[in-house]
Image (cartoon, rainbow, N blue to C red; front, top):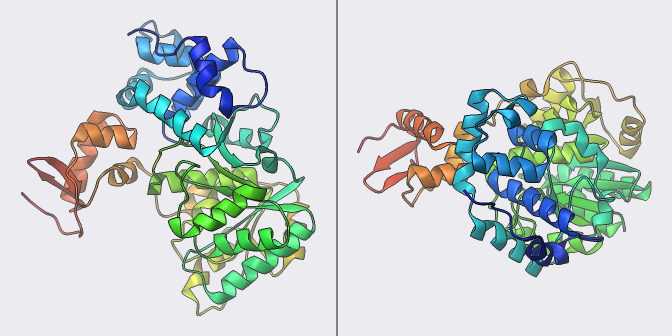
Length: 408
């Protein structure tokens, strides 16, 4: 297969409007290769992270395209033969020149900026994610907002928040920005939105992490809020433009919220809330974790009470408690992150995300959308069919609307 990367002059033309600083030929091809990796791999792909870390984005991409038959690339990244073959099987279906360049064009029209670890504005705290760290971030707004404040706090919680939860989130956010702390959250309904709005009203810095492309407001009901965040802070995604938010990407996005923050506070969360996933990442990264208590009769606070009772979260009743968290020593919590989150972020989740309830899709299309190898997708589809979660028809597969096994 011929070299996938365009000539350096063309790479400079495509990337020039999206990056800061001088863009020579070497950097242009390196950035194009890094962006291509974002199109090939799903967020948090540790195999991609190890390969790019060992060889660099450009050489790693060349090895994937050529097949790496001599095993040098595989050995450099400490990958097994199976890890290498499985990774190539899930990456190569996405290797489309048109898709890679379309994402750049969308980013240019949306006025986004691209930053990588070699840029001055890159948040160094992301390196704590190791091989699961993002290779590139897409920023809508002020790149400087990512590193402007000396301290940052993630305020997260339930979408279906109560008035009590939203009030507490707003109070915490407003008081913290008054102490020079930036607020990090996910721009969702409920607690996230309340925290962002309060930070903006108080004249502070706030950063929103999205699960899809940074050019697209999600949820759409927060389009104006996301525009306001971008006007004074930053809206950020590791996914290339045009990427749709899926459950898998939301859960992977949460690791960035935790990594960008010096402490995480869960204001309200149900027993199985996605906010517990963020809490799990914070614990795994040795970031201080706080939880706001609520009425013992409130299902919206059950997850917070669980964090307080079982996972060594600190009780947060006001901004002073959060400031104390920021000054606390960064020690690992007793319980590993995987045990905080019951809702697994496994490959079956990615296959479900890639299917439609209405449209039939071929396994190869599902593989491309999920970022998994076709053989793995075929096996997972069979299991989902047995569980009544997927239906096979003459035109392909689609999701079932109930958990009752379906035959066709």
